[in-house]
Length: 239
Image (tube, rainbow, N blue to C red):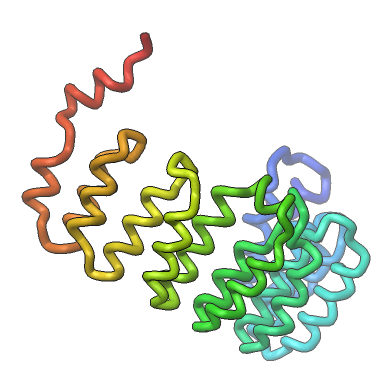
């Protein structure tokens, strides 16, 4: 049914292509999956075809077909499945280089994903170095994203004082700064300071302080600190 609808163009959403690709992959229908993955619907089907090849021990073939499509695609739609493949093989440097051409894009930017890939590999200095390569214009345009990610990476690396020093240099109204700083304080064992910071910022929702309390075994206190349903309803009304 899916195959017939797709062949006849009787579908409106990408989910139909995804469902068909997943069905073919689960059932080992490689020839049909190859047709879907390398034809006009490659933007959806190719990642499934490549993963099916990899699962069958044909990772080299999967890499070849992905790189071929990347070279011919102007929208960078096929970089992510190749990055995932390289990551699973432990080829981190190559995965970073596949991402690099997208780092300054407004759309289809894979910079954040490379930061997470490097962080998961424990390579925090490399992640920070890539983040710090951004120029002043980029940082100004993506100020909140840049600084909160820098604080996060420093925290993951255990460089708490450096993270707090960086946070202290930033405008206090920077979006996400309070939550990021509180997380650093919590990681450093300064739980009461983190709570005080969250509670003092009117823009921080009550659940953030409550979640922190729960993480430290203080569930009753967390429940008591949450606003009532009536208060939440009143706050959500317009006017």
